[in-house]
Length: 271
Image 1 (cartoon, one colour):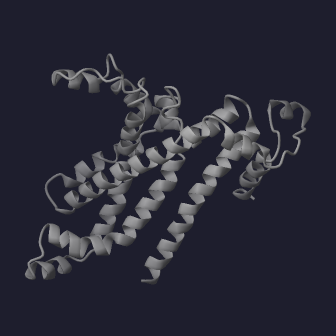
Image 2: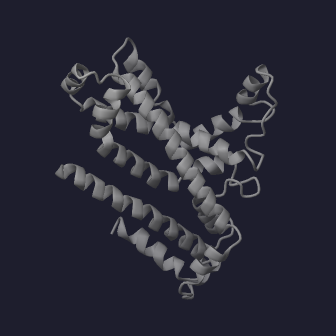
Image 3: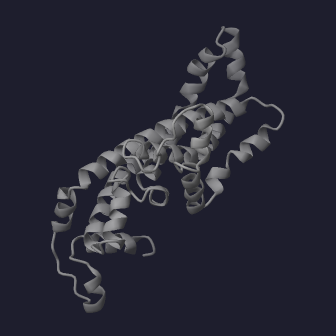
């Protein structure tokens, strides 16, 4: 009941003309798939869908690559490695609204620390959050920063499960460095990699607060995603039926990846 009711209610709302008037009259006429059709045919949908794909792919590639590099780096024991690893978890621990406020200040065109550093290199200030050509890149960059701790932590745990004896045996055959990673680390880490990537996609698809805090979906819909559009339809335009419909489309996309995740974990457990 606790988990099922919100889902059922959202599906029901998506099939009704559910607006602010409904709260007073209690009436929400059944409209079938009209809300879904209206959402898909809207001028913003294609842009939001493309931005969602670019945002998700860019974020996942950045988070995973840096997270894996850090996990491999911290696998080698050295002084203060535990302290450094703990400090890298800070982006994960900060409230999203705080993170977005910090990055909004850092990326400000006139007073942001990023542009001040670029100025020291004699590079012109970049309108990170106000230019249609770079706003999405800026938002992806912030989301990468937020997702690195998760990727690093899970991948580091996976690396810890690989016995040192395998590396010692590989070294006897001349497999060290990159060869050891390719022949020992990567094959044994693949189940963990699959889980990290799939969970990362599911989470990134529904990212909302960071985008709203940084750009609000602008400028000119340059950072508008399915998640932000669903939010605006419901709480800015008060078209709750259409907002629910778009939310359900996003849920279906995420559900596909969730099912893949369950299949991957089941296969890895059997192995």
